[in-house]
Amino acid sequence: MKIRVESSKIIKPFYEHTPHPSTTSHIPLSVFDKVTYEAQIAIIYAYHPPTPLNTAIELGLRKALVVYREWGGRLGEDEHGNRVILLNDEGVRFVEASSSSTLDQVMPFKPSPSLLSLHPSLKDNVKELVQVQLTRFTCGSLVVGFTAHHTIADGHSTSNFLVAWGQTCRGLRVNPLPLHDRNIFTPQNPPLIEYQHKGVEFMSKLKKEHDSLKEVHHISEDVVVHKVHFTVEFLMNLKGKASSMNGNNKPYSTFESLLAHLWRVITKARGLSGFESTQIRISVNGRTRLNPKVPSEYFGNLVLWAFPTTKVKELLREPLSHATKLIHDAIAKVNNDYFRSFVDFANTKAKEEDLVPTANMNKHILCPNIEVDSWLRFPFYDLDFGTGCPYMFMPSYFPTEGMMFLIPSFVGDGSIDVFIPLFEDKLSLFKKICYSLDLLED
Image 1 (cartoon, rainbow, N blue to C red):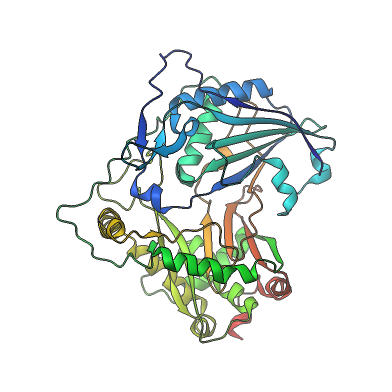
Image 2: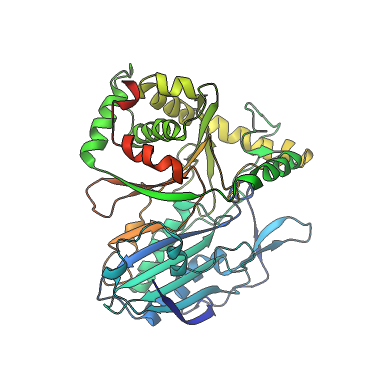
């Protein structure tokens, strides 16, 4: 897939009906912004023709930046050395590119390094907080690559922004409007730290450096990103099997059931020792967990993690319902009290001990653990520039062994696509057992 960049420029907010605001103000990062992944994340959309002109999409983006000024700013520090978002309107990167082939010739997109040519850079030294690339194919199809800095917003907020971008392209007002106040997470007085956060969301700098040194020896090993499609019928059967021994009568969710299945299958394929521990890092959205609830429109990061953990032997020996219960119970524990405890810890102990976040996108190998990014509830398919919604979206190429992405399939029937990076020599066994409901228990 040969992509030629035609132009690359910085575009700034377009204040059409409102006066230009101050460009010297800033927004302090919240404790949730500071503890999340400090990395660029990229997603890719594909549109069938007809599609709007690049100029119309660009103008819509400039209008959306008026409402979401954070994206057009820069990360920096205030006079006290605290990390902030500078609302300086310095703009976002806008790239126009073309391909000499039709989209059909390169579809379906496989998770491979070639995807990296469809969106702007993921490098840490990029100043722009959003970067967009529009790639035109000879058939008239359009691929939109969107790269954004995770410190600014989580997946929930980013998907709201993308929907707003579509609205401005269609000449509509942004609705709903984002809530920009990141100062709403105030610590309790006195602080009430009821849970363990060191070793969970935070770690010492020394341990992080030690973990980085251990990692170097594994980077050269071959990791391939494998895409798996799970049909609605398979998911229903899986959910039924996972919930069959649930004494609460309420079935486990499709997400919990599928994640439990994948945890077991990946662990089996890895061939780990039965006495080794394995855990999953699962994002938990705090908007509905906190009491009072934080509006869905809150713009920023508001995610912590659940960490179901068990021994490999137990994970594979016990039925699917056991792994599903571990996941369900771990997620349930990340409740209002847990979020409040985290806020208090982050504002006190984490500062006093100079701790750093455990979230790390620079890790290449997660084995024996797994990390999951679920995009199942995000309205990514609602990004309509004026000629219809995308017929496909997917994450870019992230070859971090054990970091999975779950997305709703473009088939649109409730089926799910999962992108799973594994060592190449583990892939054949994974493929053999990934659709089996009984193999691990025979």
